[in-house]
Image (cartoon, protein in one colour):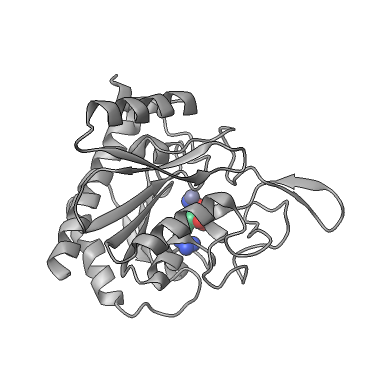
Length: 263
Ligand code: 0X9
Ligand code: ZN
């Protein structure tokens, strides 16, 4: 299998980022946007010098192995860990690790579908953007919101394309545009993907990055839940990487074309 058909350690991914930027100085730039709780650098890889841009992040949920493989981005500490690594003390005095970064953004923060309990898997953090990781992403997007027209967050698993809102049952103002963008993508998938507004398709989940980016003004905002549908779940075997990434790549291309056409 090739390098891209395997999972990699964080050290390898940093090496890959370094190598890729050095080999393509004209096309790829690494921008340091902050550091994680454990003081590891967070990079944006800028791959087009154009004014118009799309943001793609991978690894908001660490245990979703296929996600960083798609971007070669940000990797996790433990194989089945979901949250970041920050320490917080619960009301009962016990110490728990981690905030769910996809509950830490300022979009109906910590309402139904998130938990104020530090030990929960969906702990929302002490306040919106309390975590360095979500802060770094939010700061970057705030600064670049005029050029970023498409926001994509890669997760796994369940084979779904989700769009706002997840933080309320309300319909997004451009709901029909989002539906048609998702339908467009679907035509190119051989694997079956479900799509729809997050809250109605899966569950209420406030504080997510997609809803936050949408409220910031990025009207095309998606969360991709990549393969599979539960057979391997979070531990998608390396032999399945190429198919999972290829179909995600086609989806990203299709949706970017649609956004260009509309804006
Ligand atoms: O619950 C989540 O954060 C995502 N599902 S996952 O299984 N990867 O954890 C769904 C995110 C959908 N969008 C928002 N909740 N904003
Ligand atoms: Zn996730």
